[in-house]
Image (cartoon, rainbow, N blue to C red; front, side):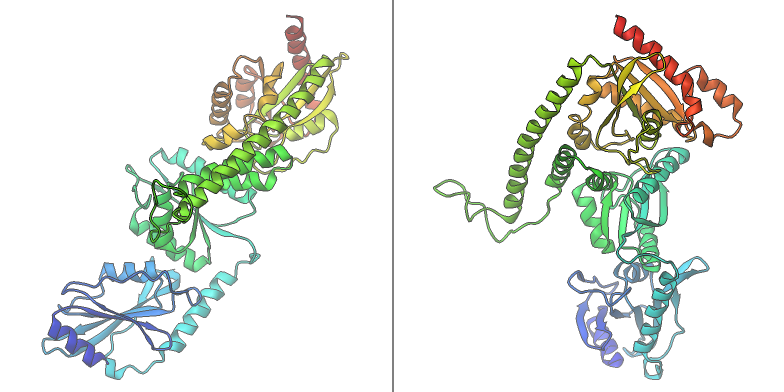
Length: 507
């Protein structure tokens, strides 16, 4: 076969490629030009394990070695093997040169070249070789104990920010991912002056990510940046992996954690708003009908039907949310009639607001070391030392780059804050980025038109900061330092909060 392939390629003066299944059956014949071939889309072919289950053999007419383009094809298509037949001047096969992917990088390379061999002298069983290679991929990935039902992700960030800021954002993405019970296998951080509009990152870096996904058995890529629909399609097409961005991840966390009917309605609404512009299903066989009776019936494309269904569902959710919001307003009205002042806890997610509420009121609200452990607002009564009683409310934590639709959806929940007489801004002082987190919270409070409410800053998690006198001295000028886990440290806060509340009520 090699002799016939080389003879035909020489006669046509074009490269010819064969895509071969593991059984030896020819999947496709590709005729290119003198310099190369273009491999057709293989999306219809299911992978045979870690690898695609296809081997590419193609001719080279100018005696050139396996090229960078060949290696990219090997990586992006996850071919079992790529082989090049060099054609000599008389149109006969010179030698067969082959390369395959590796379960582990060697000397910084994710592929290995086999020794060149004349096609007539090839004796090794290709099927046995690939079976052993697949087994090695499985063995390497299997050494990590991971529940097969869990998603396994590689996190990717492409940023033009400084290295410190980019790393901070990546660290937060790691915490978000763990909060959604997704296993983090690896992180990839690339800093670029200019973001690739199509693939976000460079093709070389994307190929590195693909090989890592292959080696680690990842099934999901999570990007720290918000991706537009065409970027998601392009990356998915190149990698054949599921792709989500930071916004989708946050929406998924909220969907899992929301307990109240209102919270669930808000999350569904935010998810549908996010999904609407990203619908990509098309049915070009049906044209749009315009004018005449029944113009919107059978002439609608599937894309239009999906969009109409989402818009109908959004309208229904809006009506339901309005009804639930009225019920919440009535509850707040009853509370106002009792003339109890309201103190609301605000802050960055995982700052310790729920733990503080539990300690102050001896409650058992869920308080985990996870981002967005609390989504639904919770209220309790709190009695100050000098016999003043207030309502203390815990609200959803804020985060940088909070999706706009999600913030809009949760404005109904955050209406609780509008009733607050005093805001307590809880800050995680043990986080190296606590200053940036404070700015995020302050900016969001301004965006929600809550900047006019008096605010007391509480620097929490002092127990996690060891003997940092300079830091404590610095922040003590701005607020009160406490540990929500140690009730003995909360007395100065209670005294100051009661003092501020007394002034507010007397005005």
